[in-house]
Image (cartoon, rainbow, N blue to C red; front, top):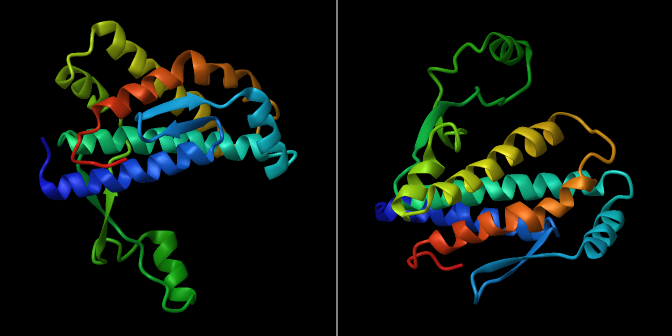
Length: 198
């Protein structure tokens, strides 16, 4: 199990993930049952159209993908499987002048500047979810399903959506909320230690 500090960090990631997932309007959550439920497609369609008629679906899928990743990272943190690493922080622009611009372009001074804590960005490739599956005695099929869901989220949904807009590409993915993502999000919810209130 993680240290108290790691549990606090895990809680922050989990809470952020839950807020993003619920804000996606692709899932709703019953906190008493610790379960997600799929939002009916008609309700999701109405929500994204009200948000923005052209880009609402894109925005909500980005919330869903990032929220799912935060949730996974938080659960991994709760079991000490995931750590923060300090990254150099760019020089703070007290004034945006030629010197600051030159430092940014050349990345000079970054090593001398304070660092900020950042979560390692590798959830799947780093084996975090596999180790989490082992701790919870998941079957090989359950482990593979969890890994497949997160790989699809990372490689197809998040990476595509944050790098460019492709019209209508996410409409077909709504069915995957029920068929794939829901079970895996609920699996992660069931693995959250009782020390973390959701």
